[in-house]
Image (cartoon, rainbow, N blue to C red; front, side):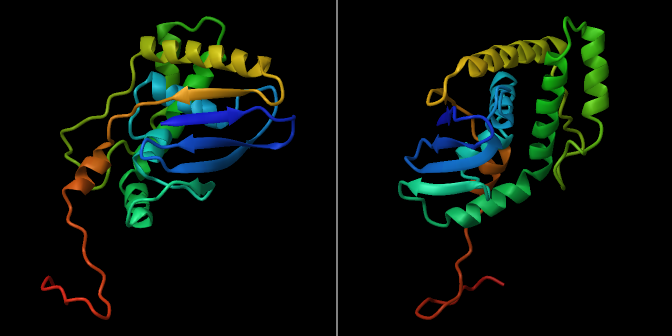
Length: 208
């Protein structure tokens, strides 16, 4: 998946052009342009660096379409809206966790020279407010927090991208090529047969 972030004049609403691997292209509206790194890029960098496949951008790559996204071109697969809704429901907690991970890495990046203990304290404080499991998940499976060294590396990557964005002139852009493994929710959906909608001219389903 390719994601392009154009730099526009300050205070104008920004957007990203999302080109999925299946050839479908969307415009995603969101951030307000300014010298600071847009929130959507922060999410992208954190998810890329921490290999979060079931965060916001991994979900977009898998077929989730948010309200801020406008279809531009490319043939969408059948039942794309249903798939998007299923993914949103299945990954709600993990999306929330990805939000918190992005905020955590931003907090680490704001520190001049954070120690491992400081990063652990921030991690404990910022990742303890939501459930880490989906409803019905195996209680024996624990989603571990990223280690301090991984969070520190992600924070450094965030600082690099912030500097790149600050140097952009109006009309220039940042482009990212992303490869995400399929989120767990996508693998689960592949094994669920789609139910047919009832309607005229269709054979009634024998399922009850």
